[in-house]
Length: 464
Image (cartoon, rainbow, N blue to C red; front, side):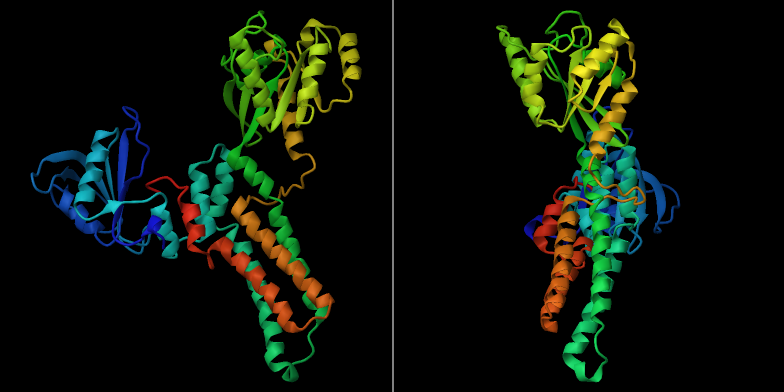
């Protein structure tokens, strides 16, 4: 392995988030051949307690030279191979905060361990065969999940629901490869190869890969979320829309135009998708330097957003200022929000609807009265799902690395089909079949390079 992951020796790290005066418990995790020695050196157990695997001991963490008590704590023992890393693992469960856990970690480092690199505990679990690469990545996704649905998909990956179909597809490719290679070596002793059957099998494998690829967009959305910008001219109710949607008072609401001078953010979850909502300053010509900066930031936010909620005031109708803003944002994914419909009658709403019929989708709300906010969420989900095949029966979602490997595997299989149709020798078939097998093996980690491992595990937090 590279220097980033020198997976020898005993490692230690703080395994819990450390927040001053917030956490009640802090955990220091130690893994490796010296873990038990370090535990016996630092941990004093009063009375008769058995130092057996998968037991929790009560006692004190003491400095080995001065015998000064550092903390009152619990010690969890998990001896190999029945541990997360399949090495000897001990965990010191001490009081939370900053000082206690840092002192315990320092004692571990002074008595036979080194500080773990990001993701090194999980890397050891992978290298020792406890996890495959899809499960390791799912652990990272579970820790960083921004919604309950994202956590469920991560948990499905951790349970092997992606690894199983990938291994099955790889096994099918290996069977086909073995049959073809047998013809290369013993063609005279074997019956003629059923070309149509081989083509059909390869097509079926490619179709299964296509089904897995369908989940890539959903996986990306669940992991990174959606950035939504509320854009419009001043005083159309953008801040009221944000407050009603987020059920908070994040943005200041007044009748004065230009109240919002900067971009206000709020984090929401819609249909299991994490959403970062940006309430922007009203876009208009102004000589006020502070407001001008806010307008510029609003325009940048609209450009960078995945989706724009272009908001207009129903009581003012479609104005030249709205038309100018629409020209700037119409090339982005967009929903027209006609706000303040409580201030107008039905005929005005019908006129506005016909006037803006070319902008779809559109919703009509009264944000200040919290009216029809649910239609906004429905419209957002429709835009997200528009034009994308859905795999509602699949409870997994692949990431970008897995997607790239699956695309390579599918391309290789398509090339095998072309090679067969063009009646090229069996040797040519095997080249692309091996390419497909290699790509599938990369997903689970059966064939993987150091650089790939470095890239994956360096994104983990220290202690995981």
